[in-house]
Figure 1: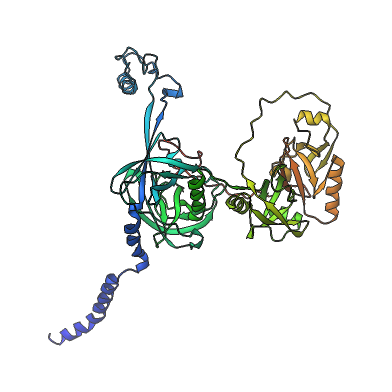
Figure 2 (figure 1 turned 120 degrees about the vertical axis):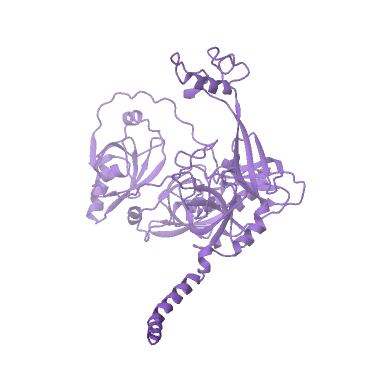
Length: 541
């Protein structure tokens, strides 16, 4: 009996060892990376008093049901169970002249609903202890009154210094009654993928809230504006965070939280912040001038696709293709022409059209810069003195005139297109301006490459392979020559009826290729008091 005890203990030794190992594994602390850097608490403590809530109010005209101007209660059958509900609803929304149930069902004696006030909340941050605040334009857009609410609850009426709709930024100022904490900007160009960042704001009107995440992507273009260059982060950003700062672990502002992608309205870890490099330039100009003064080159640009690059003998495909030059713009006297490809501007490489748009806008008005272009496979350098960007839009044409009857033109077929020499009759029929010269498209084969590239009747081919054409036979002859030369594609310069130009590269066979474009993601946030942007783009407010 006693001899069996040591044997039993011997058998238990492996089991006890396994239990000890299991206990040790349970007690072993998780890696520090899993719980995030300890510096987040230090950053939050350092900067949270510089983050403010932005409260706005706006008076809006009330409208009746169905979007009409009147506020009449809907006519319901006698004894309807909804009659009392609607009567109470309209009584609460009427002005002083409301009558009893069954009497006057309008808002006032004229049946109109009364104007009402709406409130909205967002975020911002102090960049100057004198009371200068940065936020998003959509947070304060159309506001009758703007208030800045500090972390301690104190409230100050703010004035608008200036806004920039293109980057969705705004600058406010208020008169402080005590010393303020202000934050500094960091260099967003130095951000690395995976770097920790901290977002502070006022989500869902809860007040100062700290969230953390990493830099998921840089230079993100989500087609929300002409200068998209967002920092993408998985730090939780929700409605009310708009205009709030995104910090690095040094406590420096490296972005302004602006948009999220969400199917539900809440954060799913895809948020976007305007980078500090953009913010600093905009804020400085708004403080100095009250408006933006962007550089202007005076050109229309488009992407250099692989087909266009092959046609122009550019390897690899890069740069911004000049599709048109403004007659009174800075580029024209500098010798820049349609068909040129800009590959460097003021010493900065241009990889795609967005690069050129951003660098031109960021360059001072009146500065002379060197622009490196590729023309006929060779690099050239042009000197341009930048003008100031004009924001005016073209007036929309009035009602279209009635088409004039005409004889059917003689056409040539090439590249899946029916082409005709541009006659006076065709010019009148398609309302083409007198300064547009070339060969008109009268029909497009729906199964052709031209149809895929969105060519349409009424457009005018100005050049084929960078050579001007004046009649339909010229186009056909040049295409046939390109086939003999072994070319796979042909570059067309095409004008619309107003003379606006674009380049289109077509396969010389004219046959359609395979479309492989993925559907675009939509930015969506359930609308608040004032919706932002477009139905596809909603702000994180």
